[in-house]
Structure formats: structure tokens, C-alpha cells
Length: 209
Image (cartoon, rainbow, N blue to C red; front, side, top):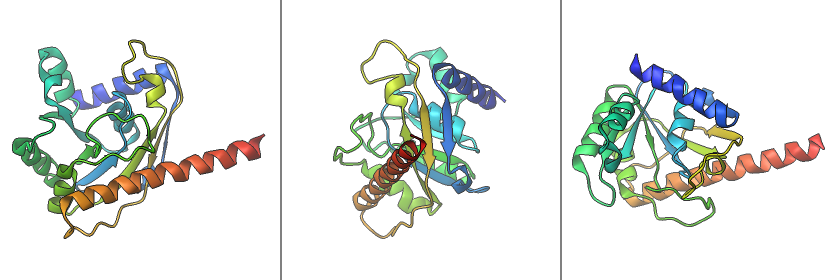
């Protein structure tokens, strides 16, 4: 129950700071475990994807976010569990595998940190490729747009702005590839999804005007 309460609270927060729209929700599997792989521009991204996804999600969150006991309680009840960045955190990987094998959804950010330049060439985290290879579940690319305007990296204030969340079609992944190559493939799918929807929005605005 707490999970759904915090999900609803996140929705209210996002609606307060700007309208949020979700596209491609039909691409999320109705049952069974699945992985979402998304770009990452703002601390608002997990909230935006979480409230847009029709099914509850689990999240790998930076371990130091759990230092504050109250905040740790909130994010744990929102589906988050800690992971140590820049290291092979086996306990976090085991927890991720356990949750997905239990039929849950897991949101991953292959870039591993907030990157505001969506065209930048960033080497993804190999742990993402490892999870995709081991889990053998549907992998859905996600592109989030607008969260960097609501809460920019390094900003002290939150501003109102439109947020769009795009769920793409399932990625066909050759799981025998090296983990790093799998991670690079999914990053390419995320960028392609972002470029595709940017072009569609440009055409829409031109025809509207």
C-alpha cells in the first residue's frame, strides 16, 4: 500500500511542477518481469518514469541516498534499493535479479549518472549488460524529456515545465554479446527513441502552425 501511496504522491508533485504525458504505455508487458532502460538527466527521472509506467517499478538508487533514515524509508517503500556506483556491487545485482525473477519491473539508467546532453557519447555501465544477459526478460527503452528543465543538474530551485515520457518497443538483444556491447546497444536504442520522438514533435508543431 505504501508503494502506491508514494507513487500517487510523486504524480501530484510532477503535476504541480508541470504537466506530464506518457506515450507507448502499451509496450509494457502485462505480466512477468521486465527491464526499462532510460536516459538520465534529472533526479526527477525515476519519479517521471515510475508514475508513467502502468506497472510498479523497482529502482537501483545510489547508496548514499539511504544515509538519511527517513528518506531511506521513503525510497525503500517506493521500490528502491541501494547500489554502490563505480564498483561491481554483487549484492545489488543479486537483489535486482531476485526482484525481476519474482515478476517485477526494474528501471535502469545505463549512463549511471545524470547526463543533460542527450547527444553526448557516454560509455554505459557494463552491469546493465550483465543484467540483460542474465535475466532473459523483455527490455524496453525509455526516453524522458523535460525533467532537466524542472530540476536542472546543480540547480537549487525547481521550476515548472512539460515532461514527456516515451516507452519504445521491446529491444531485440543478442545476449551472447559481451556485456559492454549489450549496454552500448541499449544506449543506442534510447538515443534513437529520443531522436524519433523529437522529429515527430517538430512535424506536429509545424503542421499546427
